[in-house]
Every structure is written in structure tokens, then in C-alpha cells.
Length: 231
Image (tube, rainbow, N blue to C red; front, side, top):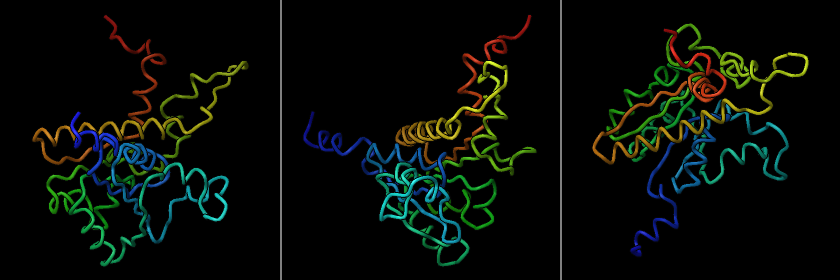
């Protein structure tokens, strides 16, 4: 292994990749934390009017004002607060995006477009940009603008049906399984897009719906009776 290659390996395979993380709670931040673990420079952007609710979820780290959960979800990142409702805030975000490789966001569908910083704007200033938009139920359809907390997605994707107790009552999985598996899909999709870009594919907009990922994750063993078409 050459000296340069050894240096890059020790710093992480994503050294030199910059990610602007506009996401909150779990589905986005957990994904970007994994990418930061691999060497990416992740800048976590919180909204000035609505800080990430996970900051105060669970026990707070003494002296920091941050919960242990927030610290775990945002490890190895830099943090900045931007008011995207102000012209100055939007201009600051655009400056960050000009030199970025990836943007991750989990606003409700259409929210960034209404703020004037959606995909069409960001890709215009940075054609090589990879953007991953995470939503609960996709960007269209009757559920597209509904809130998508983990228990809701579990219920829609039929997770309680495979968590039957001794009295035949369905139960939710006692962890944020749909959020977390979505994070893994987000991270994997971004890595695939970076490989595609390195091979000449250019930038692209990835859309990940939690309900799609949740069903895909549950399908192999929980939906086997629905796998094959009837003849």
C-alpha cells in the first residue's frame, strides 16, 4: 500500500467528501453519522426556529444541554444554526452547497422548494451534487404530507403483525427500527451514488420513503406467502 493510500485509509474511506445534513431526529442524522464515522466531513444544519427535538429526548449529557441520543446521532459532525426563512440564511446555505458533495434532508415533501432551496435550485449551482430526500410516505400520494414517526410507519408496514404476544395481541417493536433501517438505506444509497458519480454519472436526487424501506426490510421472512405469484 502506498503512503498516500495508507493515509487515506487511516482517515477513513470518505475523507474529502463533504455532506450538508439538513435532517433531524433519526432517519437522516443516523445515516450521516455512519458516513462521518467513515471520514466524511458532515456539517449538521439545525433550523433557528426549530432545533432538533432529539436534543432533549432522554437523559441529557451533564453540562452540555444535549441528550445522549442527540450526541450519538450527531457524533463526528460540525454543527451550525441557519434560519432558512431569512434571505441571509438561504444565501449561507447556498454557499455551503456550492462546495458540497452531498445534501441530506428529511423535511416534509415540498418544504425546501417553498423555501427556495429545493433540488432544482441546489443542482443548478452544483451539478455534481448528490441529494438524498427522506420522507415517510414518498413525495406524492394520499399519505405524502402526513407525519411519519417510527410507530406510525411500523403500523402501516405491518410490523405489529409479526410481534404477536401469548394472547395473540400485536405489538410494536420496542425500538425505532423503521427509522434506523431507513438510515442504513440512506447511507447505502449515498455511497452508491458517489460511486456512480465517480464513474461519470454526475449528480442525482435520491428519494427514500420510510414505508418502502420498512416493507423491504420485513419482506423476506414476514411476507413469504406473498412473494410468489399464484398460477
